Structures are given as structure tokens and as C-alpha cells.
Length: 360
Ligand SMILES: Cc1cc2nc3c(=O)[nH]c(=O)nc-3n(C[C@H](O)[C@H](O)[C@H](O)COP(=O)(O)OP(=O)(O)OC[C@H]3O[C@@H](n4cnc5c(N)ncnc54)[C@H](O)[C@@H]3O)c2cc1C
Image (cartoon, rainbow, N blue to C red; front, top):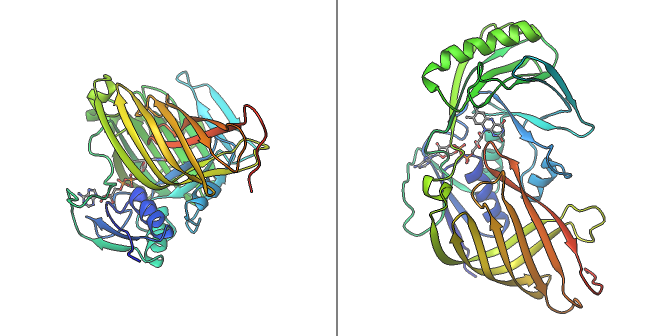
């Protein structure tokens, strides 16, 4: 039996996660990474694995993709926010609001953990290889190409207790937010700006001063860092001018069903083939076919605002043939997992409009 081989450009989180999925699905993955190691675009700064917008736990979610939490991660259940007038708001949750992780090339970072898992799983990673095109097809995961937002800040050691502080203010971060994250003797303070990039030093200085005054930040032995991100879709898509038709095939589509009481936790539709239309900002799927636990599935789907995850919602109407009786309708709302980096997360309900059904 021949093994599917998939080429992937970019050895960041997306590329490595895709490579692990390919290998777990029985294929072979080759990743081309232009830098010397994964995570070299980051500097030991803290980031959050967002966990507040859905019922499930993000670590369980990534475990379902075959990614183990072998990276340093600390759950945060409390955060202090400052509004533009400097008023303090405390946000608490029983479940973690997010897991704090470190990015970069040090031991314990998310990037290095994923790289190690990918290598251990048999993924080939070719470091120092810049690839712009994949003539044979494959997965493009090379990160942001345009700059919509920049973040500048410092990482530094501290003896302060763990804590998370955020501030929304154009004085500190035009169109964005400033943050101070402290965890296990390390800290990151930064401003994440969506405009006026030329004055980044001034905004960072104000951010540091703000946290000094409001929460007693003491910057020492600090190392500067910076990064950028691309959050908005292409201009034509934003204006709703894109038109495209196509078709595709997936080994499987896996959709979590976190609804309490649902008899299944996720629907894994195998051998999927579909046709799609992009009209304006919507992605229409007039035809989808596959199998669910051996039964034939056919249906249609629509993702409105497909490229604006903060606003997008997804509806799939799937008919599952024998052994299920009647018609099973599935309605999934796609919400933004994290609007900042456009990671999508799916929240759904499963309903059986008539008849009963059983999942074996
Ligand atoms: C300062 C900062 C703070 C952030 N905070 C958060 C946060 O708290 N929570 C959160 O969820 N997200 C956060 N993000 C966003 C998050 O870092 C990104 O969404 C994520 O890293 C994207 O992963 P990626 O694999 O898609 O891209 P990248 O991490 O950019 O990886 C792409 C890889 O492709 C490689 N590459 C590029 N071009 C080529 C090429 N032509 N050939 C071969 N290789 C190539 C690059 O070297 C890189 O290793 C933050 C980003 C920044 C900059």
C-alpha cells in the first residue's frame, strides 16, 4: 500500500500541527523550515492558549489532534484589566481562562515541544530550507506575510507572584492592548498595536510606565523583543469581491460536538469529497459526501463570513443514511477561537428533528 506524502512549508505551530495530523493519519510529512529551528521567530515571550470561549478544554482539544502538552503551561484563572480611563476590572473563572505558554527556541517552549513531537513521530523537517512554491501541492503554513499589528516589549526575570494584567487604551496601544504577564519568575510586558507603528518606542515606554504605576512593575535585566501579525483577510475578500468555484477531497473532517448530553463528542466524517463556491464573503458547499461510522453521509454546508472568524458561523445539514432512521440535522456555529490570530473553533449542537437515532 502506498503512503501519502505531504509537503509542508513552514515549521511553526501550524506546519508542525499539520505534519503531526498527517503522520497520525498514516501518511508521511516533510516540513521545509527556513530558519534553523522551530520558534526562532519568538523570543521566550509569553503567549496564551485561549480557553474562555468554549466549554471544552483547549489542552484536550489539541490532544484530540495528537498534540501532547509536553510544553510548559500554566493555567490562569484570573486577570486584571484596565479600561481606557484606567479603571480596574477583575475577571475570574473556575476553569482556566487560558494556559500561559512560552514561545521561542528554549527548552519547554511550545515550539520546541511540538518540534520534538513531530520528529519523534517520524516527520522529516528540513531546516534552513526556504520554499516559496509547492509544485506538487501541499500545505502552506509560512505565517504572516503582511503586517496588520506589531507587538514590542521586554522579557525579564522577576520575583513577583504570578499575575496577568491587560490594558485597553489607545495611549498605550493604538487599536490594541498592552499586557503584563508574570509566571514562575519570568515576565513579559508588551504593547500590541494596530496602527502608528513608527512610534512604537513611545507606546512601549508608556506601557511600562503605566504598569509601574498601576501594579508596581519593576523592569530589570530586560531583553527587548518584537513581532508582527497579519489578521485581516486580503482586501478583495474584505470587500466581498472574490468569486471562486472548486472541489476538494479530505481523508476526514472532524467536528467536535461539545453540547452537554450529546451522545457523541465529535463527528468524524471520513472520505469526504465536496464542491464549493466562494461568493462574496461566504463559502458555500452545495455538495458534500462521505461516510460516518461506515454509513453514507451527504449534505450541504455554508460558512458565512468565512474569512472573518470573529463573525463567521457555519451551518452543515447532513443526512446520514442507514443504520440511522430519519434525518439527522447538525447545526454547528463556528466561533472565533481567538480573533487575534484567526484560529477557528467550532461549537455545535446536535439535533435530531424527528425520529430517534443511536450511535454505536
Ligand atoms: C508578540 C506576539 C504575541 C502573540 N500572542 C499570542 C497569544 O497570546 N495567543 C495566540 O493564540 N497567538 C498569539 N500570537 C500569534 C501566534 O504567535 C501566531 O498565530 C502563531 O505563531 C502562528 O503560527 P504559524 O505556524 O501559522 O506561523 P509562524 O509561527 O509564523 O510559523 C511560520 C514558519 O514558517 C517559516 N517560513 C516562513 N516562510 C517560509 C518559507 N518561504 N519557506 C520555509 N519556511 C518558511 C517561518 O520561519 C516560521 O517558522 C502572538 C504573536 C506575536 C507576534
